[in-house]
Amino acid sequence: MSDLHAGLASLAIETPSWAYGNSGTRFKVFAQKGVPRDPREKLADAAQVHAFTGAAPTVALHIPWDRVDDYAALAAHARDLGVAIGTINSNVFQDDDYMLGSVTNPDPRVRRKALAHLLECVDIMDATGSRDLKLWFSDGTNYPGQDDVRARQDRLAEALSEVYARLGGDQRMLLEYKLFEPAFYMTDVPDWGTAYAHCLKLGPKARVVVDTGHHAPGTNIEFIVALLLREGRLGGFDFNSRFYADDDLMVGAADPFQLFRIMHEVVRGGGLEPSTGVAFMLDQCHNIEPKIQGQIRSVMNAQEATAKALLVDAAALRAAQEAGDVLGANAVLMDAYDTDVRPLLAEWRSGRGLDGDPIAAYQASGYQEKIVAARVGGTQAGWGA
Image 1 (cartoon, rainbow, N blue to C red):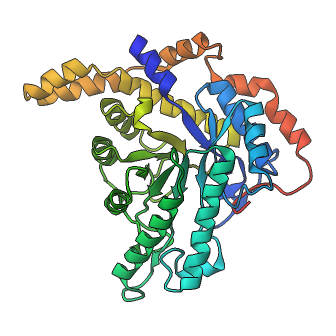
Image 2 (image 1 turned 60 degrees about the vertical axis):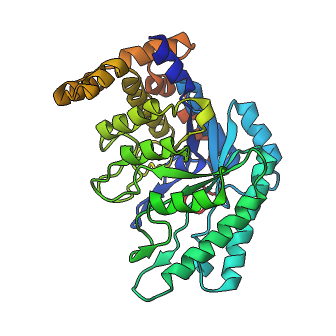
Image 3 (image 1 turned 180 degrees about the vertical axis):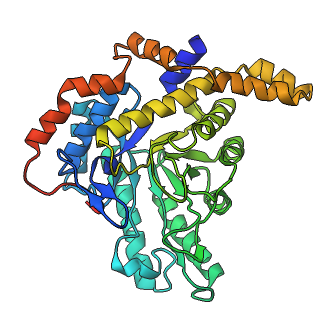
């Protein structure tokens, strides 16, 4: 049981600032009452998630959505709230200039503009004390022959190299991949192999981000996790769920067994150890559910999957595997997965001075009613803000 408590204590889930704003599908964005109007209010909401779960100590920023005049002051404000600024996410996909790509665009002027933004994000990391810069590129093509595939990889490598050279000693670059969307024929960073190849050439401070919603149906994500951990190149996760494409639903909602399998490989590969540097982040859009409660529920889902993974009898599993006992090995995993870990988690939270039921505790706190009453007027945060 001590291993379980220690493992849970080491699991820190970073929440994204944009999850607290209004979001929706490409058809409609649904506004909710009490939504933050600026980055400071986003941090205040994120602090509530950490206060009730004890497991969300950092908040990812998205630039320019979270642009402010004084980033050091914003970081100090976060600390005053009991959290810290985490990963800095760049944005080179919401400008008209990027229609044909950002760092891989055939136009040198556009490439310089995109690179300048990425370097600005490193400046923001310096000001906030952030360790990680997360890069995702929507770059790609929609039609065969639209652009030179190899030349685009050369342009990407050149930009990544310049950003990598700008990183400070303790800073890292996390490269994310995505199978498709908005580029439909060919995406410049479509899979873990492409991201991994670029990271290998860049150096040890470049690592791969696994977004659990960015894969083709049936992809064995836990294999990717195991391999990247083995190679020391797993930088972190963007946790979410998908039914069809990049749905950005709450992690564990679509396939909790998959999340358990992923976390089993994380535990098996030492990914909960601080020395491995694996960052666990949420990347979700709460379109119809309450924002703060959606984040709390997501953190709880990740904790439940992790607790089950920590309950796997590693010695029994290894013995069954070495004996070629197919059913026995599978049964060891299933015994852990079928365990109801909610009482164990409630006990763990109580031992840390937290309520055993974070959702109920938040609902009873009155915070939601407070922000609905106070946040009247101004412009609510949402996509692009």
